[in-house]
Length: 241
Image (cartoon, rainbow, N blue to C red):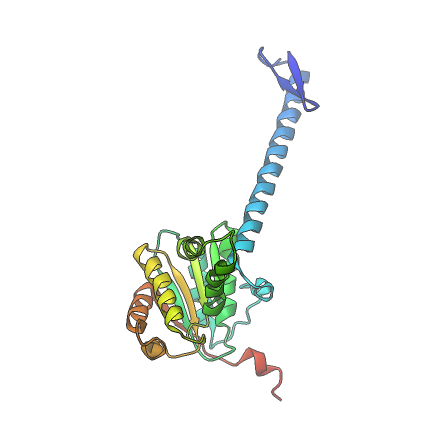
């Protein structure tokens, strides 16, 4: 006996007939149900990934910065391989991250964006931004009744990976310094990894952050493996003869 659900037959009560014609019928029926279920699950996965991309704050420009689009040279090959291995072996339970340092235009942000893209596609929550952009999310709550400072702070500290781009380039105030320290320290205490890019000598952070710089530097050095980015400035390379 069969019943119709949404225009489709479904077995009800008695066992399926085992005659050759019935077996072929149910084989096709099961294949159709399986395909529909796989289609539904894939759509749900895509929706989850789309939501994660929206939450990530990853700028549109950086969504094209994949590992495949990275121009590997002898100078940056080691950094490229380290970044690719980090994305491949990423474990949310591991507190270890990377700090990519080097002069402007060496591909630091590109590699971090590539890592973020890879992890987002695997349904890991990632938030990406400069210190200025990340802290703007908190400031915006002061004039937004729908969001609270705590909720934004928790997003920054609970996501599986936080990417802090161009650390040290921001204008430092007492509030900025304290908030940066709280974000990094909270992730440190909860074994949550960070990726950091910076154009400055990281050992000069205590000069940039006079009150909490030593503590910020200490935590970053314990959490992150250093990656030096060398090679040409890709932004000006096309202007050179």
